[in-house]
Image 1 (cartoon, rainbow, N blue to C red):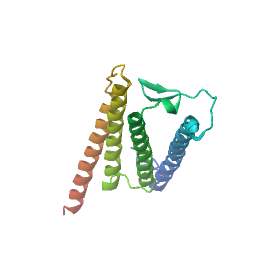
Image 2 (image 1 turned 135 degrees about the vertical axis):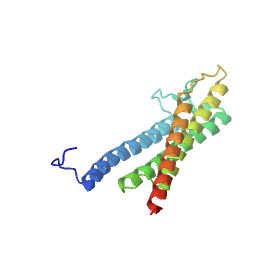
Image 3 (image 1 turned 180 degrees about the vertical axis):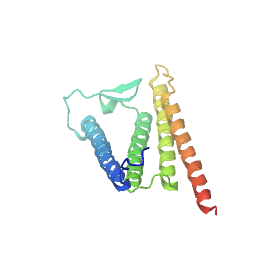
Image 4 (image 1 turned 30 degrees about the vertical axis):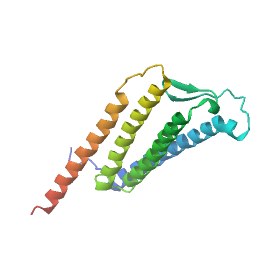
Length: 173
């Protein structure tokens, strides 16, 4: 780096991060709203309204339904767990993004949020494979989502170790 080069103000960097975080939070909440709207369209048959929209819902790659009345109770329970994981993930991700917008990048709270997100991804993988097994047409074993969840947890662990090293260095005279 050249000594005459102007270094951007750290607050301007934080403002850029805040703008990006705001945009990502809007997209995340739009996805949640879309999930609620699509789920509501599919469930209109439960309330006596018939939807001739031809809406189909897929809970896993092997499991697709055209009517909520065709869904077994065990599948319905697992689907609610999966939706609950998705919504919990949205709340945790929103909390993590708010930490980032406040300038808190390498704290115990952010590490905890990242670990939770990794656990949610792994939990979703387990639920998806269970739903595939319930479909009766075999299980499609793909490990991408499992590996992603483990990678997220690994990154959180590395961030936590770096945070601990930084705390130790700050205490060293």
